[in-house]
Length: 197
Image 1 (cartoon, helix red, strand yellow):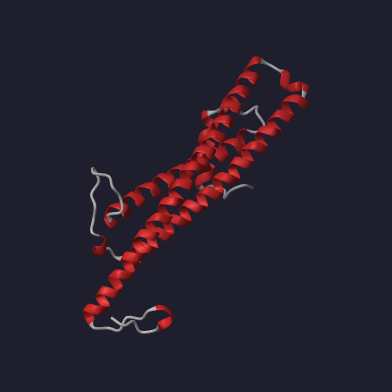
Image 2 (cartoon, rainbow, N blue to C red):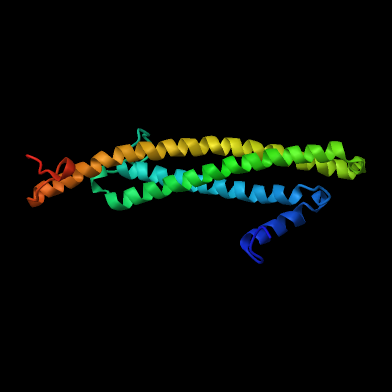
C-alpha cells in the first residue's frame, strides 16, 4: 500500500482517476497521478515560501521595490524572525529534494512506458487506447517540465533565504549590543571575552 487507507492522498487520487477514466488502460496512470499530486503540493509550498519571504523582506526593509512597504529592521523580533527564516529554508530544501526525486521517478516512468510500447504487440490496439496513451505521454512531459521549473524556483528561494539570513544576522547582533549598552550590561565579544566599549 502506497498511502494510508482513507487518507487525503487516497481521496485526491480517487478524484483524479474519476476525471481521467479513459486513461485507466495505461499502466503508468496511477504512479503518474500520484507524482502530479506531490508536484502540485511542492508548487503550493514554494508559493507560500515566496510570500513569507516577501513579508520578511518588507519587515526587515531588505528590498529596493518602491511599491512595497519597508519596515524598520530594529523593530523586528529577531528570535521569531530567525526561526521563521530557518523554517522556510528547511521547507524549500525539502521540496527541492522532492522535486529532484520525482523528476527521476518521471524519467523512469517514461522509460518504462517506452519499454511497454515497444515490447508489447497488444498495445497496438484501438485508436482509443493510442489516444489515451498520447494524453498520458503529454502529461508525463508536462510534469517533467514542471519539476524542472519548480526546481529552478526552489533554488532561487534558497538564495533568498541565504541573503535574508545574512541581512538579518548583523542587525540582530547590533540590536542585542545596543540593548546591552542601554541596560548597562557587559557585552561579550568572541569566546566570551568582555568587549571594551
